[in-house]
Length: 186
Image (tube, rainbow, N blue to C red; front, side):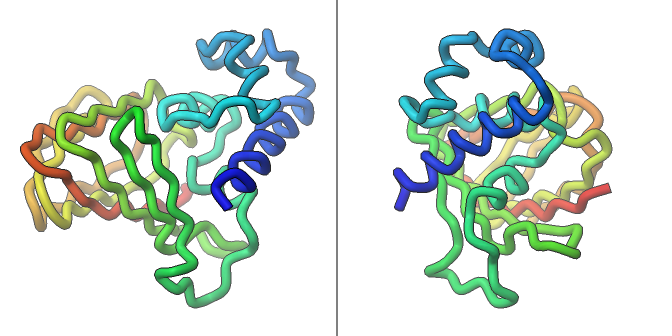
């Protein structure tokens, strides 16, 4: 199933580029990702990392969840735990579960994130400027930097903000951090 999702994701990323009339060089200039990496990604030769997907989402003006939802089957009203899409970036130590994925007519979505101890993921720009997020730490400790403002969140803490600039999610350890992100489109 993971290979099928990666193949559909590669195809969708290529469709988005072609649909805008961009060459690989154009997309490389917009994302800072090499042309060869983008080409290999679109051909399905490599799986994207969270950071790479973040850069592509910014270029296309989409949230990561929305992009992933475009390659997944239409979700039902009740999303059973066994049916929630799970995506892992092993190199970054990040696992993402689409608890309540994007759905036609709805503006919100709920994501569960788990960062391994020491994991550090930065996003250069918001995928959608002004995107509202609520980050609720369920277990562990999360250091979240929102537009250069650092926040240290412990279990039970919730940070509410709009995305205007870069963000960084860091787990200082010693164990994993598990958190929920509620995303509301502007």
